[in-house]
Length: 172
Image (cartoon, rainbow, N blue to C red; front, side):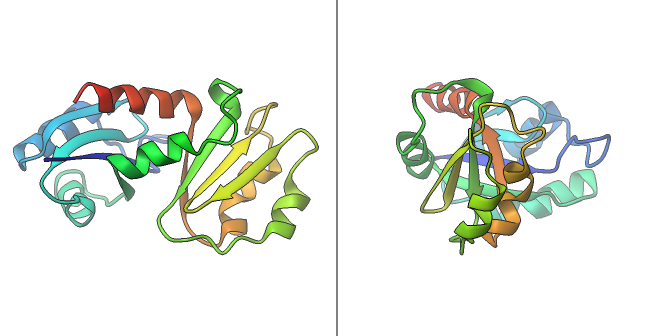
């Protein structure tokens, strides 16, 4: 069995794309996935499967819930490498964000630099864009423009969520 981290995008936001994690867990288990664990309602899942579940998730969720969320599936090794590569390990919590890209970004670094405030720092390593936003991302122009600057879809998680997903992997 292989371990995977699944990041769903745009679920349970603003009353749209409602996807109760407890119900999703039961659905995934009923389709043969093992040791399914979820974290908060924003679509963070750890599970075990023989094969990468990327192509099976959308149809399963569509059939049960009536919509297909965008998803990103990371192998245990891919996830652990993204954590190990964090260029901002000295910072905590909600100030560090990981943006996972499905495809290799074709970043517009000039645009990224123009959007970043003096306090913000960022780094692109492979398919992960790391952002340290000490004043939060709520008003960050860089956070709002990340996808456009990367040229590919991305889904972001803060360091608190990343650390919780690390714990979920340990509980496998």
